[in-house]
Length: 212
Image (cartoon, rainbow, N blue to C red; front, top):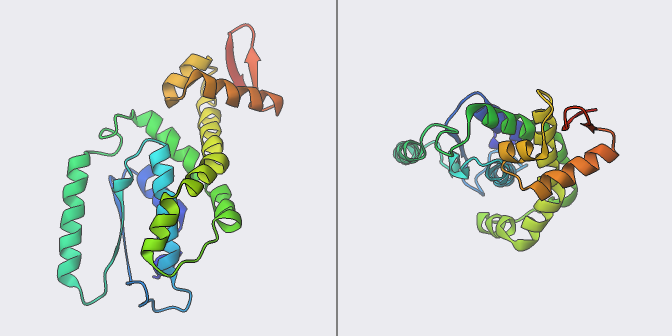
């Protein structure tokens, strides 16, 4: 299968199922068997996935992409051994990051629900096509991309987590912030906007926010 068919949702699903790491191996750039050059598509998706993982507190090193041809058996073994060692250093998913199991599950679910929107952002705002891996790395490390990602994705990801958290029980601003590692200001901003849109309401009796 061409690596260009590795969907962002596949990666998040693997972590949601408890995988400590995800490895993707593809053809070397310039040696793709398809005219679409799918290895550059997966390169972009991996950069986006790592940013999403980092945003929810998961170490992005748990996702690794390597170029390996069918004739490079020794290199494949070396890369996999190295990746295995790195995962042992990181520890089990969630535990290594200090994230409780239920919180991690919620964060991954929130990121997964956002995948269709992230794909839209990628198609409309990140449809850059470069010729080398280095150019992609520079683009995704740029201040411009970081600001764009923060403006278009981060707020919606945080809101998605809040909505999923309130699905279980009404909570105070402080409880939401503690559960999601957000500041009171960030939580208040999201709750205010959500209340205006009729998504959440403030329960005067419980003194907590709940889904509308």
